[in-house]
Image 1 (cartoon, rainbow, N blue to C red):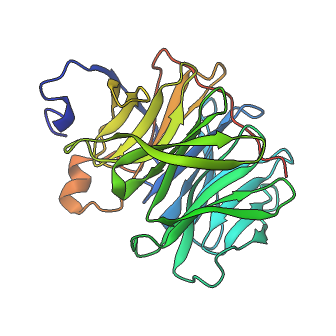
Image 2 (image 1 turned 90 degrees about the horizontal axis):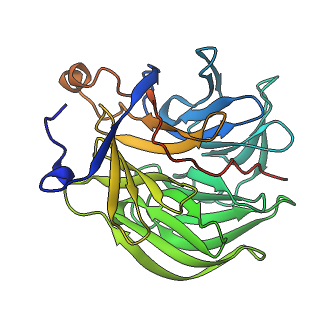
Length: 304
């Protein structure tokens, strides 16, 4: 691990440490989401086609091979999980392991898959797509409604990633990773429509690429830094307030969890490491945890 993180040079940013709570050796760990009903963490290993469920108290990690790349898994009120895959959106019965298709809005785009997604305060799933080859501009952001209909919110997306809503439900934050930007939209939560896209802030050179994201109860954004060795806490104008150090270069996503929603769980990737890189980053692909003295809102369940 480098002695200094590039974006900290010349700055006085508070730094926090993280601990590896699951040495999962995931290829591309992603999409953590906390389930308060069972006190466990749902997450995915995209490249290994696995949906996982980690219990910190038991130290156990269950997994389901769902037969294809899976970019997201979010809990529903029915007790199952909604998945975003190469075959579209589907449901996973965690008891039987059965995967049942819901809808595929991109069945004519065989080289696309779903990536990150998040449930909004009204119980609808927002989920984005991307090219399997990461081709620019081929993806879109969709909204899966509670009646299981689907709407295309906008296109020209390259690698759809982090999402968050402000506490007043009037702002929607969104990451398309190659842009290095955190975009913000006006949001009409009743209709689920977003408008007036603009740049909230852009990551400077040396900080990596923004990946997954969550928001805390003070309205600050926690952004996973791909190639940035950590997670940054930013105000909505882009000031870096603190940074969680993670001993893995490619940090993919984060979410609040724990009994009091004051633990930040962090996923990482080992996908692009060669043999030397794996020696230098032995915990790559692991799940990490930090207790940052901030809390986040509870997980929204999909209500369809």
